[in-house]
Length: 102
Image (cartoon, rainbow, N blue to C red):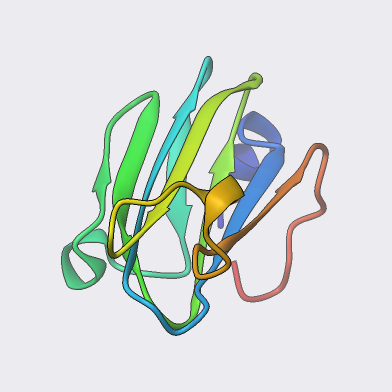
């Protein structure tokens, strides 16, 4: 990730799949960018303020600026995270350092 992007997108949200197809939607009040993956290969839609897609296994990471406005994750049945143990884990790190693989 270029230095100017890391400075402009200082926060990190990580979505970790649990082996079950699940959908996610992230909205921030700043900018958001998928890191470490190709949005076309991952079938991820990223606009200036939001990202949405699916994950079953693996990790999806996004850098963002501003504050997290909303995040929703649902399992393959459409059951929300609070009610389903199959939905992905979500980690939000404000001021996260840039990793070497970004």
